[in-house]
Length: 354
Image (cartoon, rainbow, N blue to C red; front, side):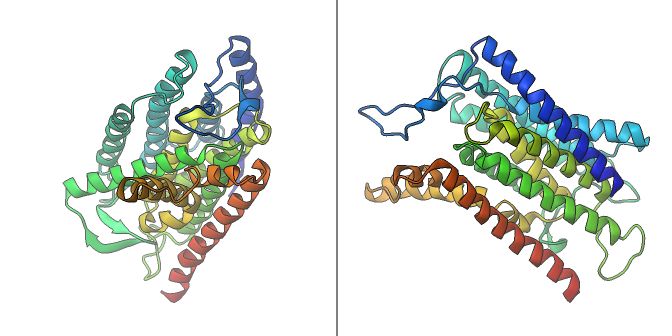
């Protein structure tokens, strides 16, 4: 528990102090994200007040995560593990894809950033590399990830290598794009991400205390390096928490795709390595709901020519209905909290029943 507190505290301080430095640097150079405005071809919520707000805040988040993880290991003289480094590899790799997207939005003033196909290819390369590497680095015959589909622990459904790579790619792509779509209002995505990472702190610590490496019982968990996963999750939660101070309404900086893709990757990676893949739809509930609202909107328009929402993603629909931004954010945080509560209840109930 001491390691988790140290990691979370360091990440929070780095993010809290580093973000305003980044704001000054970006603002001085005029690096702000383009804002969509209502035109004859499309109607958008009034975000004119956000014009001039710098983006690329994900750089500060990543700095906090990396500092929290590596400094904790340095001051406690604890060896690094493959599991922790794999999550960081996934976050940094996807963060670089997002950085390229933010570059086009900021420097080229192209509000859509990278082409969708280019972004998906970049995500796929990083996700597939993570998936393959997660089956390497065995410890006592166990690797960081398992080819078995997992719920609260590994199930009897074991995938062949090709399907496993595609499965992890799907989880990473779905989660990163879910976080990315949710990042449309001040503080919404970063607050929801903080809750999810805190949930994984709890799960990883619980798996560490009941790990099969200590005692092979019917209820033990076969997760490799769960304590290190909790350090990564605590670092991510702390970095998000520090960034939220500057990203809450009215936001002084946006995290951009650099942050949203990195955070989505961290969440998906933790699900894979903690063997809780099918629990992810609840632990990342708000991101799933947001993504489904976009899928439903596009599908309905293509099939019937009608839109089911005034605007997708879902939070913009409520903006168009006249809800204040802060009210939407808080209520969506409540929804995320309920989803995570349900997920943690299932996680604990499985252990009690076993």
